[in-house]
Amino acid sequence: MVSTTQSIPLVFQRLTPEEMLARAKAFHALLDRRRTIRHFSDEAVPLAVIEEVVRAASTAPSGAHKQPWTFCVVGDPELKRKIREAAEEEERVNYDGRMSEEWLQDLKPFGTDANKPFLETAPWLVIVFKRAYEVDPDGHKHQNYYVTESAGIATGMLLAAAHNAGLATLTHTPSPMNFLAKVLQRPANERPFLLIPMGYPARDCTVPDLVRKPLDEVLITHL
Ligand code: IYR
Image 1 (cartoon, rainbow, N blue to C red):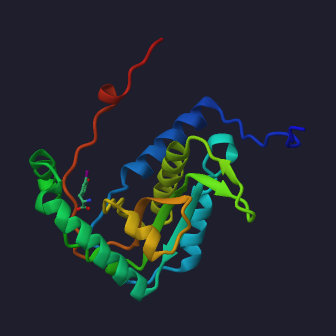
Image 2: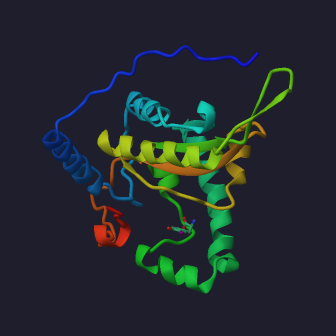
């Protein structure tokens, strides 16, 4: 028999058009102040804040509500050191020939290189794993659906929640990322998706003077 979930009344706050527009504008203004940073302060951030941020991310919609994600939160200096070492090893190969000339040129404005001190400086590293499938204790496997889309949405919500909580982030992809599953001893069904250092910006933190695409470049309206 197909199991069903009991339906309950939706809790939904209906807003006036004026409230909708005001809130949409305020939310855009909030998100527009989010910047990826690469210079973190080593100041401590309460774990309780990170936990709430992960809780917010984990409200994301997902294929068949399988919630195919695991968030590893790392504050242990020894683990952070291991992660930095492994990431820098991969990045040295990337910068020394695995990335194309065009790619290296495209990265010039960001001043990135194979050194990743932020992996030790930031008080917290949040590593998002996508769960390719589920495994019962008896070894029986179950499918997950739209795993990449689901993990991507959850990660977007994680970044927004962190920013809203007053934390800065970096979406880091030290590819290939398999070393993260090894260092963090994750099971075979979990695949590293993104590594996100979280914390306060360093006092002298600067960011590239980027311009976001205007609405008419990203929006096509069919009336
Ligand atoms: N993973 C490398 C390279 C890198 C790639 C992209 I695309 C970026 O937007 C930034 C960096 C690194 O972290 O240096």
